[in-house]
Length: 336
Image 1: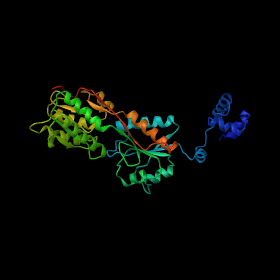
Image 2: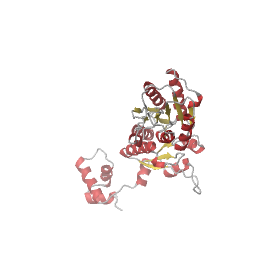
Image 3: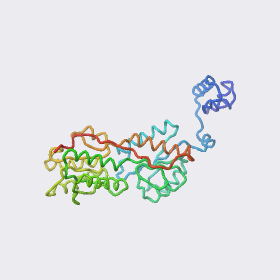
């Protein structure tokens, strides 16, 4: 293994000068710095990460806890996009990301906090978990810099989608198309669901819309079967809605299947609205009207915030960062 001593001998400079060049110190000349770096590259030198960690008290490794109920993993378009942005931002700033081991059936498994300490993560981002889980709470209360995505804890930085404004914008969009009988199949109970549902009721009241209890249904996020079943119940009503909101784009396609199997057409006979703005929703017909979340900003802000907490803990505010999305004007909502 090539050492800095080997590079210093090859370049005819001191080990200290080699160290300064490789660590981009400003007190040596640019030409010398480039010559040393080129020699290091030609000799196949790689810095010792363990030694660097001892010197800086950092591993430059961020943990990401990502564990969703439907086990869709990185095929989950919304979170995959966030993680891609998070990874790119972290790498630009010199950090790697590693997933926190969430396998609960593994013998002698570590808790989330134990695994984070074992890996020596400088900080952790909680992207998609059961935030009320005891192990998650233990991690959040630890001294490891932590940022959550789409969930708010006291004294923890959070990057949030603007779920309140998102539903508000969608409802105004549908209202402006002439719809007055609007149903909402919302996701399973969570902080995100509570915000969206409250926003739906509040905006409907402001618009003077009547929302019968039977127009409000529940299906889990990304649950096409549940969305299918709840859509059938709405279609069986004597006064069925003219437009149905769904928990997310993926679930919406389950509802559309129920509509099509009744011999009805979207949007000619009934309109539908999704949430998230996944890529496939823009390519299938009819193109889905949805709230396109800014996943790039969500991932970037989360990475930037946790790195600021690591590198500048005394001046980094514990705050909630809200990222707005925008209505994607598809063709699944008819003008009536």
